Image (cartoon, rainbow, N blue to C red; front, side):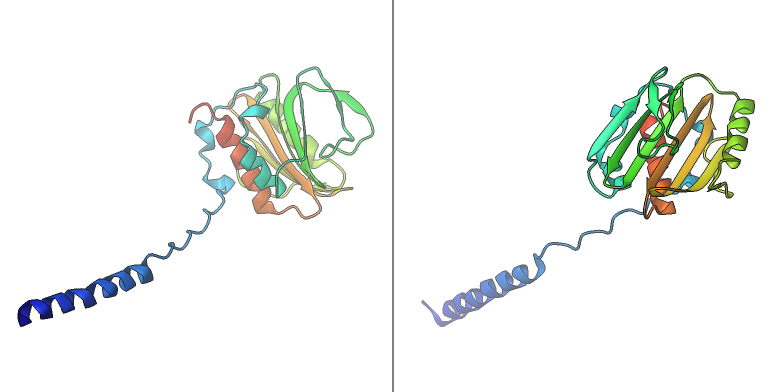
Length: 207
């Protein structure tokens, strides 16, 4: 081998390990991107939402239920129009009575946390919806602070219950009255909002 060929071979031999080293230094796994921020209710296009009055429990994704509860649901229940509902059940009003309901709804629980949602079974007029809002304002142990529009009219209710705090959003979408709530010892406003946004996005037939 001539001298020039030997020099080229030596240079190539030095270059290959250098390239391998550079590749090893830059081939580390990329940093994971942060999770997306929760969508606030104020960003919902509520005027264009269309919600059906159907049994909807199976339409709500399990990961979204887990996000609301802080982990996978340990129990669940559903009810329909004309069913007798135990109002002392987790997430309900706390009364010891039972009631025949005119709604379709679901509840999921994990420990002391309950995520609940329901729609009235029959069409609701704005006048009837305003009556529901007024009645909620008279419920003992609850406040109805000004909140983001969740349908029209809409309601934000914040209550102290035997199991902690209950944050409820409710509103009229077309002729469908939707209520969603989160109950537990340490319920956060943002998590309750995200739970309700999840429901609207899961049930909206116009999307």
